[in-house]
Amino acid sequence: MANQIPEEVIEEIRKSNDIVDIIGEYVQLKKQGRNFFGLCPFHGEKTPSFSVTQEKQIFHCFGCGKGGNVLTFMMEMENFSFYEAVKFLADKSGVTLPEAGIKKESSMSEESQSILSAYDWLTKLYHHLIRFTKDGKEGYQYLKDRGIENEAIETFQLGFAPNVKDFVAEFLTKKGFHQQLLVKAGILSQQNDNDVTDRFRGRVIFPIRNHIGKTVAFGGRSIADQEPKYLNSPESELFQKGKLLYNFDLAKKNIRKENEAILFEGYMDVISAYQAGVRNVIATLGTSLTEPQAKLLNRYVETVVICYDGDRAGLDATYKAAKLLQKVGCGVKVANLDVDMDPDSYIQKHGPEAFKNKVIKASDTYMSFYMRYLKKDFNLKIEGDRLKYIETILKELTMIESSIEREYYLRELSNEYSISFETLTAEMDEYRQKRGIPKDNQQKNRYTNKTNITHRNKKLLPAFYNAEKKLISYMLQDSYITDRVQDEIGASFSVDDHKIIATHLFAFYEEGHSPDISLFIERLNDDRLKQQVVEMAMMPEMGDISEREINDYIRIIQNESNDSININSLKEQQKLAEQQNDPLKAAQIAMQIIEIQKHSKNTN
Image (cartoon, rainbow, N blue to C red; front, top):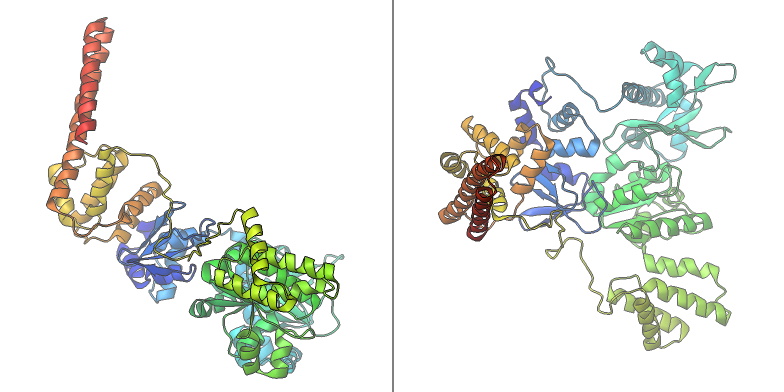
């Protein structure tokens, strides 16, 4: 697979795509010493065990064990084939791939590739119609009436589907697409008389893109009396609305920059906010926030600002989204809108600056929102309801890690309801004790040097095994050490995988390569060996290695190798003695084997 693309081209692509930058588009990375750490995108975790080293251009997760270089990451993250990973990174860095002699393998089914192509054609067609033709005039006028300017129409590739039954069917049929596939994809609708018609006819089109910018579905907004008002493409292999967020592909760089994401409920809210100069904005796709969406946001940011409609339904949705975001580890703030307002209408009425300063920047903390939200369920004029309200708030406060924040809200309760601060504190501490939360709650930063990394392999390994691993970790970084090892012990490692890795390293340096772990990984075809190389390359470094340390590792490996040879020879002699019915000799040989093993254990 890899040898179909020239090695020098692959190397150029790797060097043109810094692994920290690429992974940083998927994971919020924080520098810690020489490496970068973040939450692993391949398994669920709340404490970062995912490490990226810029110097070596590799990544490794100490939790689930995945590791590799920038190409490996893209293949794992996007389920890309090798070619797709190379092509994606080549396009990103402006490197041209040779056209001849390359098998363009895809991780997607032919059907999904065809549907993706159809969506691409239609995105361009619908957009062209709304911008440049009479057929799209009514859609264009609708957007203008909603305050959407040409720049936003271009940025979001908004379009219009003419209210003509077979317009799209004819267009895509001429492009070579089969009607039944288009019906299955939800681009066309099949009528009772087996006629097909455009699913979105007469609607303004909002292309729904995945996180790498490919259109995978449409949202259609009716501009007449069509029902429903909003219509999405049906779910498919490409489009699962519970896993995607509208505008995430464009917003993610701004989300990383601001370290904050603003979450809306609708397309128009996102587009209005974008026009108002707020660019770290995303929206759910007509459903409540889901756990996969929340986990996606948690990989990118520490805080999410929820900006839903100000009515009762919006408040209920805000509460559910806030609890879900907190569950996965996100900090939450809540924008406060009037009951008759949504973000789009607020911007239209009060303007961009008011939205930025009086809504987004003035967002409540989660606890302030919760106290306000909870009041609707109690009649606070009644003593019993007041006590229940206070009790509920105290229980929620137990979950806040910051002692300063807890004290702040306890004083608010104390002042508002004339209950002593000491009484409220004692009651809350009792709730905390019942939940098993220690009194001296230690607030944990997700990205401190005190991060506890759990290594998967807790078994105590023999000295020769650790010596081989440590020696190979130095060989990966120094060709001089590799030359010494090749001269003195060759591939006489006791662990078979270590023999194979060492042999590959000898060949790698003999071909004239300088130490380059990322490139070396690309030369290995066995994924298991790649993981082992990455794990060894990420072993903690103790400064410059001394000659004495190298000699010690070589001696341990040589002793183990010699002992193994002697033991194997003795075992053959023991077996022969047993076959010759000489139990005394067999027992004597067995004692020799035990003595060698004891000696080996003591010297190691």
